[in-house]
Image 1 (cartoon, helix red, strand yellow):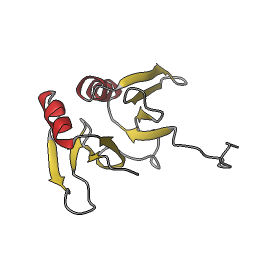
Image 2 (image 1 turned 30 degrees about the horizontal axis):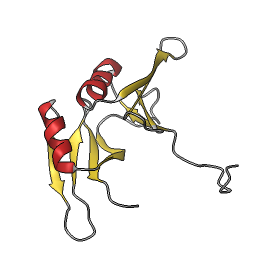
Image 3 (image 1 turned 135 degrees about the horizontal axis):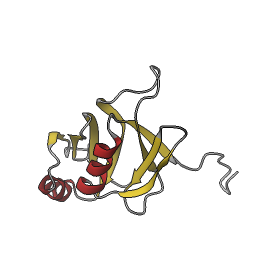
Length: 132
């Protein structure tokens, strides 16, 4: 247990379904600038790949579906990324080939945000961070 009394102090790993780990790794590393935390054999014939923004605690595991109950690639991802400046992030990532869609927010309490897709069609939200 942590000093605050919580048994679960944070989110360590989120899983993102991909069809091609090499292609996904190239996108998250080269286009988004993420660090490769793990890229290793996982059991017989499988591979475990984890990426994360520099210095982040939480990692994203880029994993192919291994069974019919596993999440499938495509659709809205179960997570989003924060940025201190959405406009600057969109300009930088756009220069690396990331295409944005559905730019919204910025009125009232809703922060500016936009979606982009990875090579598997996973729809990922980028949100201008606000005080939490």
